[in-house]
Length: 406
Image (cartoon, rainbow, N blue to C red; front, side):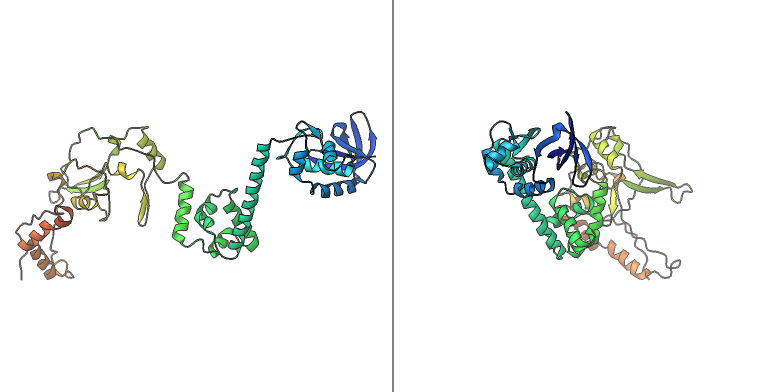
């Protein structure tokens, strides 16, 4: 006698060597003997041989139409042998019964397991949803294969191009785009980076390293939540120092400066002036939490990621009138103090002494200095920018002390 039994979801068949009340000793085709619980035995049969039974049953199971089987199946619980008799014929043999068992077991979206050899058909809406899911997976696999072929052929599909840096630096390994790259790498026998570079997906080394930096250091994105700059309520005393900031002409904020006082007096005071946003930003406030998380502004050639959003940064800044007039359309700022003597930023021309610096073009410097002092030049300086910004960028204040001409 032979027996077909279930071993943790896998089906085996062998010769029954002995049988007790609760178990059987079964010899497999390999010669190995195993102890099988009686509860796990699903079929006992005299023929065909175990290997033949499993081979023929698997082949026949593939031909069972699941939709038709689901229609034949009763509404309540049923056994696999019952379905075999309904699907094939009333005298269905062990091969047909085993085929029905294998097919039912492999179709959980159609039939739910209800115990030893027992099943129950799934509700119609569950079957439809499962079939839609299976079809989506089939279509997705076809798409993955198509993309992989294109990549291996040296062309990068647009959906993969759109996610190129995510695929390289922070991939969703369940995503079809990532799977296509993996499949293409196997087809082309290339590393993913070499494959994508060869397919023209990586066009800029700068963008490659920049995006990698963002993925590694700003995994949640480099944007900011909605923040409002706290109001400065304290009145601050103004320093008598004339402070100078070393920034380029495109700067939109000045948060540090230098000053020197007492030149020629024997006592020189060197000042370092730092913005103090802590006067308005309180601990554990929304702005404070963002600043503590960022810790610093990130600088790079031609670009920067500020520690705080521009609306907050620009709320605490010094700015010259020329920059203010040129950028005010893009700045959300209000002038709180202007034209004070302490804010005066005077441009001066100094002719270098040629006796101490013989390589300077002293005469050209004197000519330029004299030109700045003539009325027409002073008038031009006083009107510069007025047509474009509605007010001049500079206020002429030349003092009539031109250098002596030769």
